[in-house]
Amino acid sequence: MGSTRLDRRSFIRRTAAGAAVAASAPAFLRATSALAADTTTLEFWTPANDPVGKDIITKLANEYNDTQGKTDGIHVNTRIKPTPPNTDDYVQYTTAMTSSASPDVVMAYTYEPISSWAANGFIKSLDDIAKQVGVKEADYFPITWSMMNFNGHFWAFLQEFDFNRFWWNTDIHKGAPPKTFDDLDTLAKEYTKLEGGKLTQAGIIPWISSTLDWNAAWGGSFYDFQNEKWTINTPANAKFLQWYLKYVDMFGGRDKADALISSIPANYGDIFQYGKLAFAMEGEYLPAELVKQSLKLNYDIGAMPVTEGVPAEIAVVGGGNPFVLPTKAKHPEQAIKFIQYMTSAKGVNAWCIPNSNIPPVKAAATDPAFLKALPKMKPWIDALNANHVLPPFPSPITPYFMTNLGTTVDEVTYKKKTPEQALADLEKGVTDQVTKFKQSHPDWKGE
Image (cartoon, rainbow, N blue to C red; front, side, top):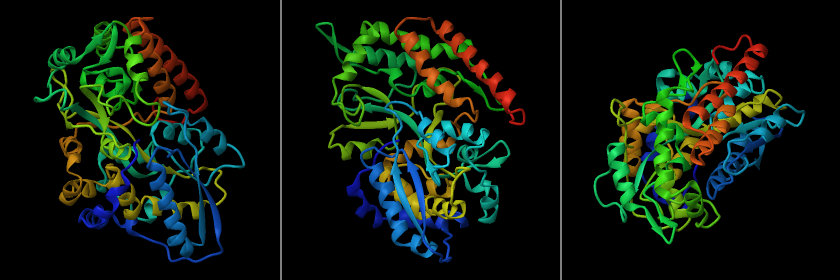
């Protein structure tokens, strides 16, 4: 997840996009409660500690307290609970939700823990409230619907979702974007600079992000959505790792890339933002991050290179802002009111417009006014319209898989294992986890 640029707020309010998103939202997004009651205090946990995401979510919760919260008789304490750096580790959240000190509302930045929380009974299904407020599958993109509704129940309301597109630094690469991996490799080699054995600029460092995207672009898939099974150790899945090794050799070792990455300031942001890469996979929120950090970067955005037979607009959902109701929440009825507010048209606008994120409702995201206000979002809307964006894995084993996929990439790029060996070990670990899971959750459908 990214941050947002604060100085855009006044401009966005003068555009038609805000009204368009609100008008196109389904009925439940526009509903508010007229119920007045004695004040109830809610504990709301969010990982939003990034430069401006923190400001947006805190401001929105405070506005609720000052407006709708007074009507609802609710006051929300917003607790910023970041996950460990460079991980999607929600152990702190899971531990809290199993205790008597459970928060009342939890928001995540990624999708990975949601299925696991649902399978283990840590969050409540929201079937009744979804039915009550008129949630309709047709209002949502298929991928966003699958993030909220899975295994026969409705589990979360979404405020936004995001995925990556292919970016290039136009000060380094001034031509058209590469369409194939051969083209990308040729250009990347040209733009890679080694001075005195030190890597000072790279065409691309593919393993620093978007492993799932690169695997999809090479025609691989770690999960069979139709049969709800993991598909890990396959020749197709080895291709992107073999491609990574081409860059390890180009740089003269993974350690050279590590040193270049370590050369940028140790604050929020990545090496592409600091102008050290020609190409990168980045989320739609990056323009806001650049402004917030006062970074000057000239860039363009499009579809990533793909191998033969793979659609050019393919992408994999990387995350979103799902809001869930912990099973041990002390004030579930009031928590639902707050969740509705945060995922209402107002909440969606407050997050998506300044932060350049994608509303989960189709009509809102594809409204011409939204794209007029945020023209740089066109590559994302194009990908959604092409219907080649893949959903996150719905498996409760996903947190384990994602953590160990990072280890797999490290093992390959540090040349400790071959791609085939690393994938075989990853598959064994996932298979063991699936076996244990099925023994304790016999009624859960799929792996």
